[in-house]
Amino acid sequence: MGKHFDSVLKLLAENDLDGAQGELDKIDSEIEELEKDRELIDDMIEHKRGPKAKLKAGKLRRVPDGERSGLIKKYASEIAKANSGKASIVDVEKAIVASGYDLGTKIPGTVIANVLIKADGWQRVEKGLYRLVEGKT
View 1 (cartoon, rainbow, N blue to C red):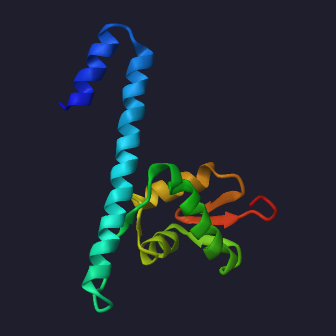
View 2 (cartoon, rainbow, N blue to C red):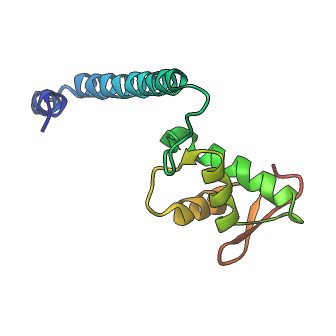
């Protein structure tokens, strides 16, 4: 285990929940900073390689968990509006990947289905197919 884990264990043993939460907040902040740095460094490397450099197959940007459902709803809505109000999970997944995003899961279809099931304005038609309900989104 890492230094943060050990620190949190000590704080929890001392019944310092605020301190443990503070450590968790520090971890989240560090992760966010590292992701920003990684993206900037990746962009600088691609820029340095020049215009002939291509995005490697399979190299996608990971969607942060907090933004995942919004991204899924956005692409599902676009597909539904172009397809008589219906969107299939497969089409949503393909659109997300084609846009260069990775949902960060090995089961993207299940994640997409769960987001649409819970979202206002979406109705399940059949397995893998959802309808955008008028006036809801």
